[in-house]
Amino acid sequence: MDLKFLLLLAIALRTALTSVGKVCMETATECAEVSVEEVATTVINLEELESKISRLERRLRAVEQPVWQISGRPDDWEVCAEGPCRCRPETRSISCWGRNFLDVPPTQLVPNDLLKLDLGSNQLTALHRDTFLDLRQLVHLDLSDNQIEHLPLNLFFSLHAVTHLRLSNNMLRELHRNQLLRMRRLHILDFSANKLSTLPATLFLTTSTLAILDLSSNRIVALPSGVFNGLRDLEELLLTNNLLTTLPGTTLQDLSNLVSLRLEENRLEHLPVEFFEAQIHLRELNLRGNQFTRIRDGLFKQLSSLVVLELSTNRISRIDLKAFEGLTSLKELQLGHNLLRTVSPGLFMPVGSLDRLVLYANGLAVLEAGTFKGLTNLTILLLHANHLRVVHPDLLQDTPNLRKLQLEANYLSYLPPRFLDGIPSIRQLRLERNPWHCDCSAAYLSTWLRKRYLAGPRGNHLASNKSSFWEYGAGAVCRGPGALGGRLVVELSFHELCEGQWASMRGLVPRLPVESPTTTLPSTVLH
Image (tube, rainbow, N blue to C red; front, side, top):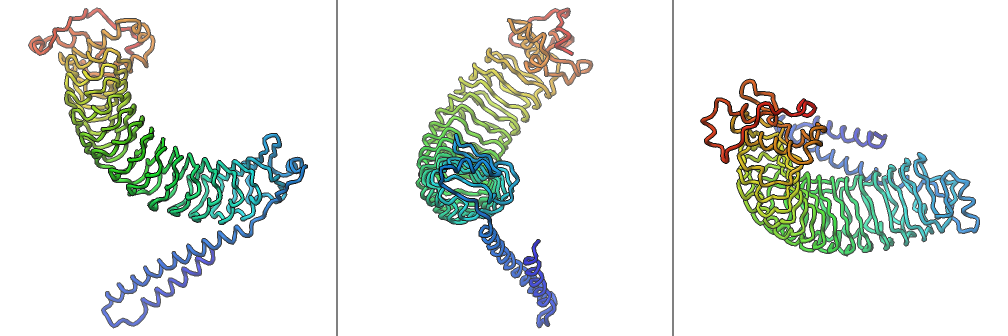
């Protein structure tokens, strides 16, 4: 804490103590309340004053920074090589990367026909406004991984040709509205991992050629209206890990060519239904780690090109029946780590192209027949870490191409007959950490697993590969009864499961063949 701040703090405390010590006409309690209010007001004023002083100090520090020599003489590249940075005349580039510079080295000569300049991974805290003066051919500028707190207004005014500007991992708290005024060819702009809390409304007014804009890992609370207006060539927008709570419906109205939108790890609770109206080319949308509780009808209706939709780690407890209408190209839908207790049959009908569906860690207790209706192209279904106790025999009849199914960490004690018959292409089945009850009710699962293990060319492979066999369903371990507890379901024959329970066989349809008790599985697989 600097001396100026300590002095201001002392003044504030003195004012507060004077207030407390004054003679009060009111009661002692009222006097104390008035004093507390005055102290609070003083502290707020103190914080504002300290912020202004800090801002002024940053500007003064920039003025005091050294400046290197920029020249246009024929032998400049030879002289450039004599400086502390690495000069490459064949590519017209200078690398000062990772030199632990506290300031721009004044002994470094910089040719004015420079194309690429890397000042990344140093300890720069400020830059003089003339640092890049007359570098009119510069295309790539990297200032990432420093400690820069302030950018002089005209720092980039000579950089008409720059297409790539990287300022990630610095300590920038604010940007001037005209900071990028003359950078009309910018293609990639990276301000990620700074301390920005807001953006000037006209910051990107002249950067209409931007294709990638990274503002992730800042402290942005809100976006001013129209801040992205004019960015019609923008393809990737990253706003990950900020403090956004709401976004206006017109935020993306000019971003008609957007392909990827990253809004994960914010505090968003909802989005206006018109939010994505212009995003007909969007292919990836990440909303993970927000505070959504409901997905409403119509929100995604314009996203006909969307391939990946990430909604995991929210608080979603309700999804409207037509919420996914319009997502005709969707391949991957992530809904893990939410609060869904059930899924309405027919919900996924509009996303028939879906290849991967993730529903793990939701608390799902019941899945009815028809839940996955329309998902004939689905190959991966993740249902682990839910509260499933019973599944409908026909649950998977609509997913004939399923290759991977995860049901581990639920409360399943058995699988009903024909449950797995509709997925002949299955290659990976996870069943561990369920309380499998090994009586006649487990005969269907045991027989299905044994037939899969013994049949076809995969048999020899599984016999020699313990991990593959485990993933193929051998992870199902009996919880009981009696001596069967702890044994693998796959190693139990029909005779072992149903001995002494002949009455219960009436419930088995169709009748399952009794396996020979002498048939055993290879010890390399079972142990």
